[in-house]
Image 1: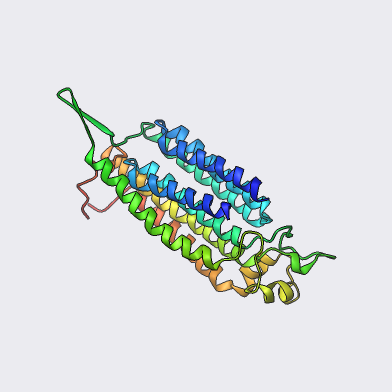
Image 2: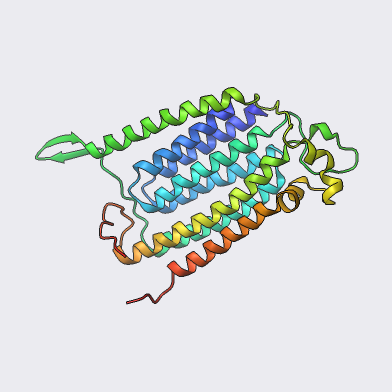
Length: 112
Length: 185
């Protein structure tokens, strides 16, 4: 139970960074903290006390294998997280080249 | 197991808080690495070796890209001042208060749904694998892969992986488009 709550606290720390920072890099960092906490939460759900990794070998007790389904889904989510973070960072590079600053308060003249 | 994970998670939370309040962007990124690699250790403890390998690779790549971005531009952090000094008087910044209030409201909002989710879930470590029962029992025979995670990812849920590959391709095209040197006049 306490690990779930700590996971939620990590999510809230990421949310705080996302909403109160004025620097694009810090906002990306806060977003990645939120992502990490969600991955960890999903994997925590599938854990069995004293469980084995989901790899079938000779003589393994099939009842004591941890749930492989959340692990497969989180694997997909991690790779998609990398893709979105690469997009965000390239946008940040573009914004720095145009405005000479990472400050989101100065980025007001956005137009097509 | 729960205590080990809690200590690790506390360490990660302190790293996260330091990353958000560091005045140098480079040290903020390094402490972001604390959280990412702490997650790797958590995955190893939770018996998820595939996830640990993928997370190490992804975290290293993102850290390198982010450090390259920061070194190429500026290392200064910009933050909203909590106190504004004007003619000798100091006021509390209204914008900062508004941001913190928004965070609190959203935190209460998420806390409500977190509570509801936790009520329905099994306690930590007592999970019943009823969703994945068929995968665990027949996965190895039907897919021919000893590793159940790869069996699910590439066989039972192959279309998910196809969608993931599409998203990766779209992201690469998007990055190349954004970073293209010449634009339309």
